[in-house]
Length: 172
Length: 270
Image (cartoon, rainbow over all chains, first blue to last red; front, side, top):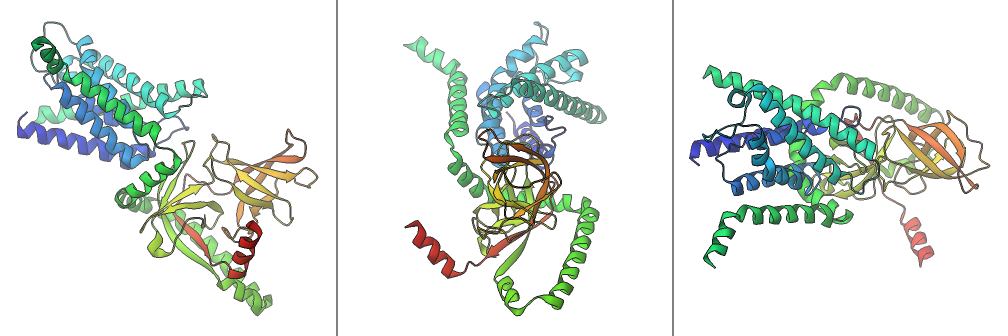
């Protein structure tokens, strides 16, 4: 990976971490909805990226969030798991013939495919995250509500982020 | 042998994945409560300064609200001052002077977890220590749980381990206020004897028994009274006075306990 793309990745890391710690962690609409937008970074991993690299980036992103949220291991575990399954999920939404380098986004994949990809990523991550967070599991209905509504919130944030990156890329 | 090595190299990411997940889960489940606090306070000097930055920004948006509360408090203090000059004796003034109040800003806060914690921007250097009570002009917030040099971790009422000695205002019926999780505006007062005359709307205040809080700091109002399952005590639901999700400034109560009381307590526990 060249220096420029490395720097860019580090920029994304800092951006999602700061946004999550300073603002999004404080949102708790109706006690259920907390957008975990930081997984945007993992959603943007391209298909040429080394898998060990993906795991390490995700793990450290989770760890940094954990340190600032007082939840040791929670974000690290769920983000690492997501990074492990991201390539497989990406494959589901990209046609088999494509072998070029692909940066996931609505511009490169098409709106519907990208939305499906994001939704699946989000639900997987949030399910793991909220199960780990509410151990010992006492109230399944609350857990399901948290997963559903927080997934929707995260999804909306990522759609906006996609729109912003797309329009800023087209201006360049 | 060669193919085995190949296999391991090609799938090294699987081993890395297992390693990282194990590490995360050890972190998640390995930290028992006390270690968790140590982890959080050691991170506090770093995260504390970042939280402070954030609450600095937030602070501007809440200025109007904070001002209103301060004005109200000023008015109340002023009226107390007049009463004091009118009627209080020199002796009670002497007692009050041993109670110190340290103003602190709440820089991080949560209300939606099962065990909530807060961070305030005063620590050992400012005289804040473990076990001191935290309240604001409206009512009780919680108790200091651990102090770093510049920041302290507070266990608010909204924490499963919190238990605050409380009574019904104007009576001597006391019990312990605990939080059952869920609703961040309601807590439960337990161990009040069932023959006590408690009514919906009564005010719940601190007892001052433990020197954590001064006496008669408001905690909330009674919203429901039931006989508890053991039949001897009441189960009293309390609407908390302070909205713990909306905190700016707080006071830390630092009481220098009379050495004679400490001596007596030591004797009795021997």
